[in-house]
Image 1 (cartoon, helix red, strand yellow):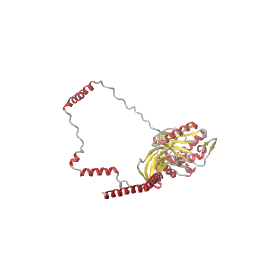
Image 2 (tube, helix red, strand yellow):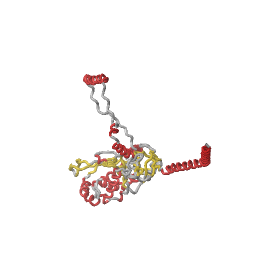
Image 3 (cartoon, helix red, strand yellow):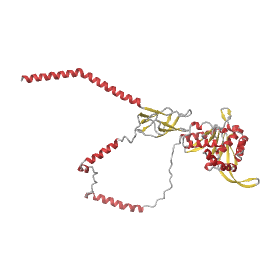
Amino acid sequence: MLSKQIIAVARGRSLLYSKSIRRSIGPSLTRGWDFATHIRTSTFHSSKLLEAVTVKVPTMAESITEGTLKSWTKNVGDLVSADEEIATIETDKIDVSVNAPESGKIVQFLVAEEDTVTVGQDIIIIEPGEVEDATQSPSKEAEVHAENKAKDLTEPADQQVDKKVPESPSPSVGDKKPLEKETLKKEAAPKQQESAPATRPALGSRGETRVKMNRMRLRIAERLKESQNAAASLTTFNEIDMSSLIEMRKKYKDQVLKEHDVKLGFMSAFAKACTLALREIPAANASIEGDEIVYRDYVDLSVAVATPKGLVTPVVRNTEIMNFVDIEKEIAFLGKKARDGKLTLEDMAGGTFTISNGGVFGSLYGTPIINLPQSAVLGMHAIKDRPVVVDGQIVIRPIMVVALTYDHRLLDGREAVTFLVKVKEYIEDPRKMLLA
């Protein structure tokens, strides 16, 4: 009996001692654990904030401050490499690509497609990291599917039977009357259809589709209307016999293609002819700025090029020092960039005179619109065989109608007609260009 009491007292003291130790040591340990946990958590969150990279709208040009986010090329959760394109921004002049500043994973889109964005605006958040090969890291769904498949193979057959989809119960005897009613209704339906009167035949489709105008089309519309409102436009026409130029092109096109790897067309001849005529009529190469007229001793030709998004006018610079082959190479280069959507603002900036060739689409006549602040534009058209009088004889010649729309504030009728006649003379006898 005494030994049991001694044992109980000893146990009680040890219990009290352990509680006292816990009281003295426990709070400090708890506080230390909480502090360490807090530091670790805060460190984790702060590192995540530091790792996140926010991509902004890049600087596009001095005259462009906003655009429309046309499309995302990636989705949230996708992995991207450094300098990989992730979005396209459409402006009123060019399309601008937005590239990832570094490799990582797309976390969040801050704007939606078709939203208007400004230069410097945040548009996407990327979590930096190495881009792994998707083939080496299978998705979780594939792993779960593989585990379930292996599990099904190891389960007993009696357990697999339970997973089958239960068959639909066969109709009971009490359901016979509803079935009979439904059958009667189905049999009666054809009779009602036969007795219905014949309706009028359906008319053609009268649907409508509304599509938002892209920024380039809006800008083109604005510029064209501005030209009509600002310039005192007048158009003069003339006819050009293309026989000599066609003969020259036919004779030398294969040699030019072989030696210079470029096709010899009519645009280079018209560009050179306009350049020489502009030197003789400098007002056609000038522009109005405020209350002053700016005359230029160089010629930068804007060549109109049709693209899926609209008409653009890349510039062939300093044509006064170019020959036919140089002009053809530059036009081919700029035309390809325009069709591929790779033109830059520098390619379209400036221009002192414009040539538009509607003849490639079959146009016979047209009045081109002046590309402000320029003072004139030449319109080329299709070549058609027509009867003309040559030395008192009626002969068939390939004729092109050309049109010059000019700003009457700068050019008088005499100067405009003289310019067009000069172009006609150079084209009808290309050898004159060598003597000019």
